[in-house]
Length: 65
Image 1 (tube, rainbow, N blue to C red):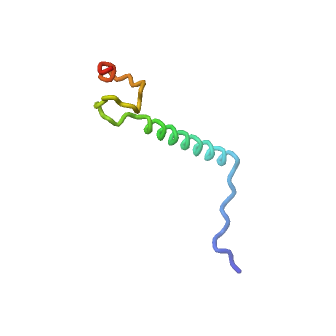
Image 2: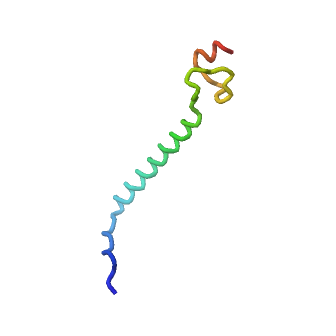
Image 3: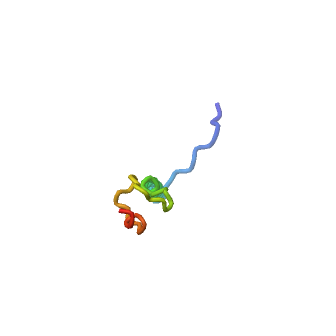
């Protein structure tokens, strides 16, 4: 029986490490973006008794307190 596709060429250690580091960095950036997006205020300036971010430092939030 004939193989369906030829085997892929071997990957060097350097290329493997480079790819692994790129994927780890990409995963970190995606995770950081998700965390920051979840904490972001989506009120767009209508901060009246916002419970999302109690430590909000926006000027109009401080004036309301």
